[in-house]
Length: 197
Ligand SMILES: [Zn+2]
Image (cartoon, rainbow, N blue to C red):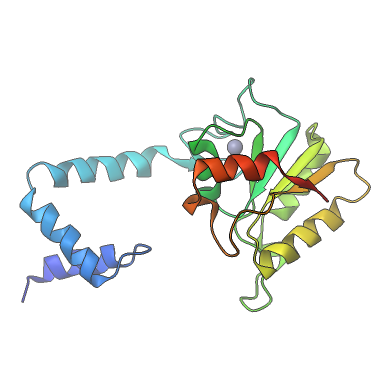
């Protein structure tokens, strides 16, 4: 039906999360309809991201600089650290500007089924930060799934005796829901009502 170039682009776009072949086809069709304006903009934007975005060596966030703008900020609460599963959760917390502390991106949660061990997560870096930085409270903003709870238990056991207040997000976040899908009001409530472990 369509050209091999078009098919190839559809295949690439269909690899992106939450997009199947049908959505990818619609996107490609729209790109072709606006070929003169949309495609050069997209090429430029992808190039800008490729050339300029890097992973923060401290927290794991994406930024144009490493350490990122959050880690190098002088106005944030530097003794409060929020541990998140993924960068999308960090973005969700930043979206409403509700949280003023620092972050640490774990890169996943422990999972026996998927074979995710502590070595696969940024836990060594976390312990290193705790030794170096002046952190006195840690919020474990991890999913309310079994794997999330096991990860919370594991990290809090590592932090025992370090004189750090440890809390988890309050109830209100549905089981398995990512922070990214939750409205700012609920996130604020979950932060304000956080429970100390
Ligand atoms: Zn950072």
